[in-house]
Structure formats: structure tokens, C-alpha cells
Length: 164
Image (cartoon, rainbow, N blue to C red; front, side, top):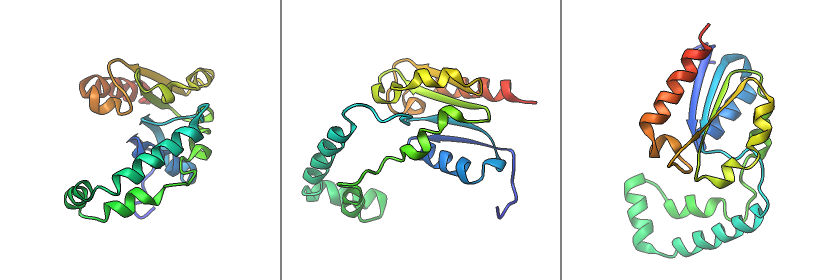
């Protein structure tokens, strides 16, 4: 709003992809396209159990002073607080990710072939002509990190195809 920008293209990975969906939701008139990787569009069977297991792992990690001190140092913050912030909470914003199959603008979802939970529900995306899907081989949650050259080429192709 401050810059009064519109027709923006947003590329986001993981948390950045979730933020991109929120921005699109609150300022859809400014967003021209989205490129996302590292999100789940549907809550998979067993999500709650997996979340509880993750909470248990986080509780073990926060007891490891050496790890916490290291993370505090490289991130300049209170990593114990960061890790405990979401314990016991239904934190994943499915209210935003579940809207992705209905998006009304060009969008690209890149999913690593090994990101099994992110592949759940992908078939519903094929019903929307605005949504393009790339399954990136030899990649997991962060397809952009594991296959940066391939990811960049896919994004470049997408952006060139949607130019007016």
C-alpha cells in the first residue's frame, strides 16, 4: 500500500508461500500471479497425530542447551521461545491453503516429488485452468532449494507464458 504497487508477482517457499497466500487474500487486486512451493493444500489423514509427534520432538530439542545456544547465535533471537510458540496449537493455515484450488489468477505450484503430504489433494488443482503444477524430481519440501536450476527454469517459463 505504501508504494502503491499493483500487478505484483509473488514467489514464496514454505512460510513465504503461506505469507503469499495471505497477501493474495487481503490484497488480491494487487497480485498478478503467485509461484508457491512447500505448502499443503489439504489436511492429510493423520495430520493431528503427526503434529503431536512434532510437538514431542520439539519438546526434546528445547531441552538441548547446546542446540538452543547455537540457534540463538545464528538467528540472533530466543530460539527456545520460537520452538515452543506453536506447541499444542493447530497452527497450519489451511483456511488459506484450501482456497488455492479456486484461485482466479495465474498460479504455479511446484511440489517436490518426495514431499508426500504436499502432493495430497493435488488432483483438485487440475480443475482450475489458472493453476499450473510442476512436480520437481529429486526434491522434497523445498523444491527451490534442492533443485534450484530446475525450479528457476520452471518459474521463468511460467512468468514468460503469462506475460500479456
